[in-house]
Length: 153
Image (cartoon, rainbow, N blue to C red):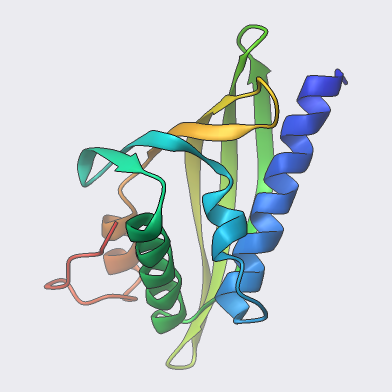
């Protein structure tokens, strides 16, 4: 494995660990999560295409996201697999197959989904774009959120 590929591998291992620490309330890792993203980035999901800017509003959005996951009983977010492709000397694309586990109202289960990340690897990896599927639809199908609720992104 090349040095850069190993660096991206370790980056996502740390990203997963920080996500789980935040979801469990173990520690405040919002800064570590925001540091995983570039100064500006693009999200493409069921909400459409959104342009984000790293900073205080993004930290608030991350906190809201973790509170949402906690509210639906999520207790673990684990990487099942990842496929790292180095595009050139500066960029990589990573397909991460995530599984989050939940326990809500006595109902236990897991939700699997893929997210594609574009990372810049000039110095340390930074996410500058990601593409996610229709999480809202899956959460409604699992009964984790009512049909009438719109999931925040």
